[in-house]
Amino acid sequence: MSDPTRMTMASPADVDEAATACCAPGSGEPALNVENAVDLAARFKALADPNRLRIISIVSSNADSETCVCDLPEPLGLGQSTVSHHLKILVEAGLLNREKRGVWAYYSLVPGALGALAATLGSQG
Amino acid sequence: MSDPTRMTMASPADVDEAATACCAPGSGEPALNVENAVDLAARFKALADPNRLRIISIVSSNADSETCVCDLPEPLGLGQSTVSHHLKILVEAGLLNREKRGVWAYYSLVPGALGALAATLGSQG
DNA sequence: TCGATACATCGATAGTCGTCGATATCTAAT
DNA sequence: ATTAGATATCGACGACTATCGATGTATCGA
Image (cartoon, rainbow over the protein chains, first blue to last red):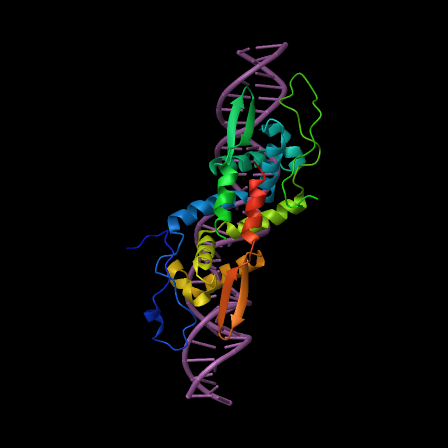
């Protein structure tokens, strides 16, 4: 009976108790269940920092879509350990890939990851 | 011209081929400047909470795209003051509109706000 | 093997955030 | 005016976060 993804209106009978009811409440279950909401919020949280957005911007702007860590601290004005911290968060959010070659670590966009988030946003109207 | 919030590409880097260089550093300025990054991050921050995402979901799922505050605490499992707090954040982020009619306050999606964010994300490839 | 380099991890700290209960404000009706 | 109800704001508290400097780890070259 309760499909969590279904958006149901309240039945008119629910409103008669109070002549001053503000509006018709939705069904018991919100359209977005807790599980999905937590998952989505985690990815948005990864984007909710200016320096991480700039990292994504720099990575995606490189011709080969690869950026090594050494090129990030200076333009961002951050310490190396802080940059490493942000990169880890972006990788764990599934937004960046990490590939180590020799001494260097290269980060690149996960194809479609940002697009998937964008699609989720756009579907909300 | 160009959308200021768009994460545009930095101009191609000059390739300095030092023997031990890991890669070609980008131009001095990151593709996304600090100002725009902070602005974008602020909007993503508003989305970076599961309960706020569920609020948006509930609001957008209502037939008339309007939801009064009284219908939110119960499905979210939150106190009334907490719901009010989240609504304020969403309004300040430009994602929700607030309209007070009588004793009740109705919240609705700002048309195009989520879509604009989605477009910014999608432009990253 | 030794040293240098690139990056990750650790520990600490200051600031921010989500939540609550209590209180204030605002509106409608008595 | 007074009361009741809906919502906003306030104050507090625990949890989380961004940042740093220091340290650990792995790789390459001498």
